[in-house]
Image (tube, rainbow, N blue to C red):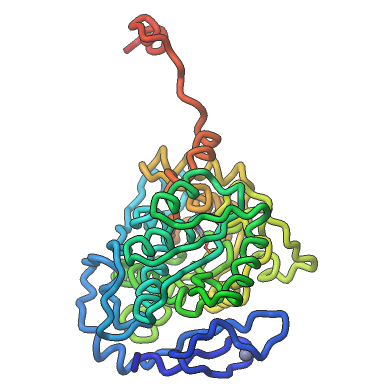
Length: 408
Ligand SMILES: *Cc1c(COP(=O)(O)O)cnc(C)c1O
Ligand SMILES: [Zn+2]
């Protein structure tokens, strides 16, 4: 990895050899000294000769930017390269020109596949046998899928009340699914303890420094797809805060390398019931660590990456908003009705966030917005039914249909 000279601690600046197996900086008691991957961009640009013409077969178009060796064979299911869709009806309804990048179309139905593909590629390069993570559901399902692809053992920790679809998926991919009788935060702590005990390869996004690097490709792609007309805002939901940071870092570095002329402002959206990043960013006095929302993918009480998420909001000149569960469900319904895009609650939260930001005058009507849908609605049909109601039950008789639609 001659393009990755070091890992640097985000707290104290100490640097570490990227080939060493280390997750966090040991200089800090109690808090995680999160490490950031440093790049030698001369080497990166030497290797990157792709045209930025908008054709993106997969995120591996940007391989020279990813922290894997130049001759690594990617473990891939074709992640990334998701379309950026114009959304006319939704724009009308939100009162601002809106485009949607639907990352729910990734191989396991979630943006996290970008990161998983990179970390599982690294795990195979390092000769690892067992991979693990804690997850509200999607990271686990994603890891299990790529571990299946790479023929690795996969052991995952999820909160016992994760939506059924998110448990069925990793089981089908052949993972050992450990449903922890507790919250995501407790599942997370357990996975960390187990990593210490057994030395399994830990994919937990916030502490594995390579993990977030794969999420940069959503920013690379957005930069490539909007080069002619960079949007004013890019909107992500926030749980641990890694996704919005990854997206920002990718866009920012393309701007620093003169591959795109401007950067967008980032709008981060949290649920009312799990709002620690929002409260920290806005300097609210009491930052609560509760996580009470039906948007399970962002039900995080103690975000592991508040620092990086706030950096993304601040550096981009953006901000954050919180939305209620009702507003999230309304966003899910609206996205489906207006554009035929089926999102899970956390994936639809940005729709609610844009509506709120318009109402509060944060987003102006003459600006442009890109909503990133992070996860597919098929993962959580229970919430979808809550958003959209139940089917109409009828006897198998023509008359019953006539009764419902008297005018045909
Ligand atoms: C994980 C996830 C998020 C939040 O990402 P963080 O990196 O935890 O902020 C949002 N939406 C979906 C669908 C997710 O799976
Ligand atoms: Zn440090």
